[in-house]
Image (cartoon, rainbow, N blue to C red; front, side, top):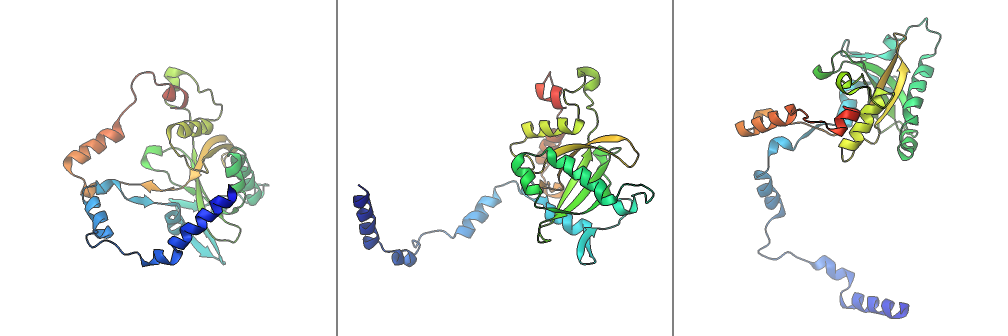
Length: 255
């Protein structure tokens, strides 16, 4: 059987040699593929397409080169490097303090993601101002590079506080609020950030705080409001302001 199969393959190659593939030419009535794509794009909602924020953009915007290596810019109060915040009188070494934070974070990653994370080298950390919806919470950004000093990534650790639903639904089953957020995101999202994890650490104020960690601006889509039609703007407003109704198990556990 194997010999017969091999012979059929050789016969097929003799009848249609590889060099014949290079002689292919499109049919005279074949439309231009670029024109086809442009025609399809004309009927799409253009304001839903752009992916405006990526991790690479975060690196370009937030970092600079100093002494031959990347480091976070100092743009107080929006972005303040940890080296400007760390108390020199603190007995803990700055790098040791940060390493403890990253080790606890990595311990909560899935095994394959933890192996990938360990191929990166820590470079710098800074405190970053959060957005309007997160005012009052702490946020840090970590800069890491691959072994060859290239392929930088920026991770963001954002404070996770008690759910606003706790007064009515009771405390979460998760001791760490960062874990509660991560578990909820993994259930809710078809493909969560590969570096999504959580940790608990002692802050500069001497108190413990819970955080969830993910890449900063990991392919974050954005809508161009200036190009939206009136009906589209109404649909977008309804989508982003929709509130959960009923006793949803997801919000009971993770909200």
